[in-house]
Image (tube, rainbow, N blue to C red; front, top):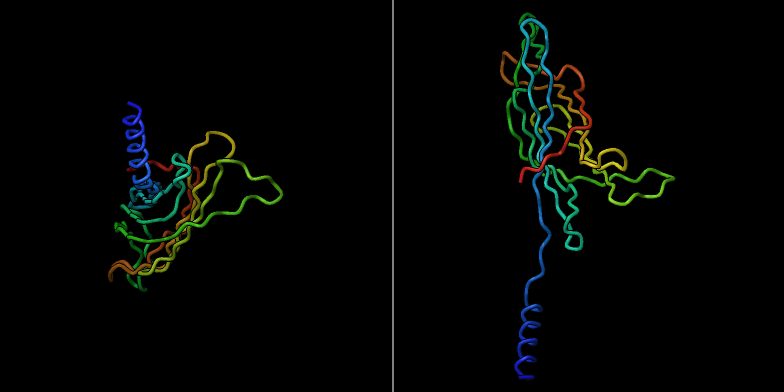
Length: 187
């Protein structure tokens, strides 16, 4: 009886030692930024900028996921103002395209002179577009105060996009900024 018990315990121990260690898990999360249209004549409807991020955890802390990479930028009917060549006047363009990226997020430093708070973090990203002149910058953070939910803030600036002969020198007509938007889990 005693030998059977020892054999059973040894078998359980062997199974536990040979089981592979759990890898770090990943989650896909999204930020959806509403881009307002214009009230000019003719008015343009609002569009949406969607940003997809990969969040990962560490084996030691299975419940704490932090942003690691910006993987996709999706423009859905984002309104742009185009200043065409002289004599052609201005026009409007509704930008709809998807860009797959691999932008690594960097951890923002803690505020100086203050003790770091547990479970607070901030990660920054910056991306310069390759097919047109423009930048996308932002931060994903979890604050110490208020509702402790993930939030995003950032800015989009498109300066010179040439889509076709009728839509040249298109821009966002200034800096489009957002702040306090929720980061929602997709997967």
